[in-house]
Image 1 (cartoon, one colour):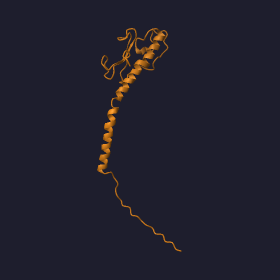
Image 2: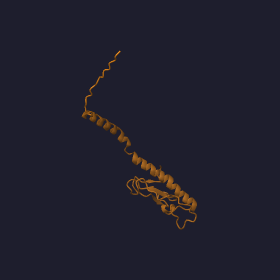
Image 3: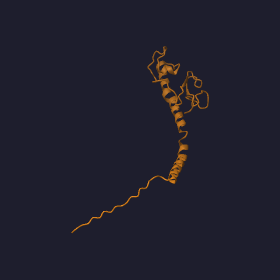
Image 4: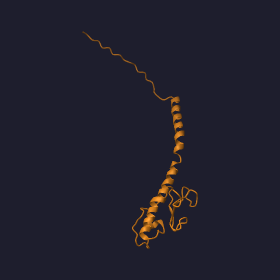
Length: 146
């Protein structure tokens, strides 16, 4: 018995495959619609997170270091620099209380007063906020409710 094998050849058409202009326009339109929905929800979060971080520094980390200094030495430091380098008049200094002088999320140094302008028997610690000018509405201080 003889078997015959037939080979069928299918011709492939050489078509250049590419996206049409309509397909590209549809994709761009969909991306635009998604961006219009998502971007407004994201904008403003960066500034809000910087304010939250500043509150954490002012009410938490730096204030804790200032309070530790006061517990060790009986008085609050004259400047934030005293938290890093031992001043001559600090006899019971157990620092450094901070690793380096802190700056706020906008790159400005924190402002410290002792005695405070708002807390006469305590200290004032504040960030001048995004504008970098003390005394404006965007200041974040330890006398304000968090």
